[in-house]
Length: 222
Image (tube, rainbow, N blue to C red):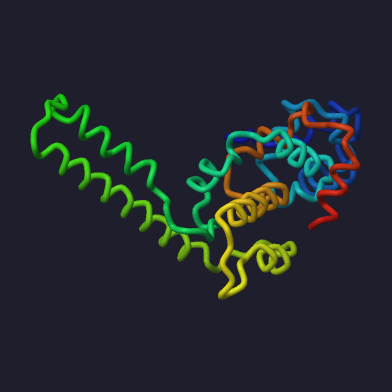
């Protein structure tokens, strides 16, 4: 949970007057753009309470940190994990819940009533697995309904139209996966992804790297 911003403490730390402009409370993004390099992480975390990940994407340094984090291939952005976490962004074959269904079947086979080989255990595993897949499919459908009107503000049409398959044109599974991961990563960088990573990455100085050429090339592709 983000701590409340203590504007006076921030200004005092920087040796600035209490009526300093831009104010850290009324113009936090502008303030961060000017002073983020001068503030330690424990103070920067206060800004999570008054800014959104999308607003903080306006700070170039924060956007760069997210980019460098992505370059490190974090497990959160591997395909299986990302598909389970953000199913509404996956446009390939609907197989959400398959892994969980297999886990349900295995549990019924090995653990239910001691896994003693009773005739009904195998049927129970199949039934539970089917229920698990149905639950995931229903959650995916409901998530799509809940988010169908949510459209990111930046370049949404150009992003999604480029990634979405042309009607009637088959695409390989690999191409769909690559498009999906690119879409997820773009949304993360610009603050449109629902996740808990922002408060960790945005204020972490370890992601400040001098890799401008690779970074500029990635953003130019957008």
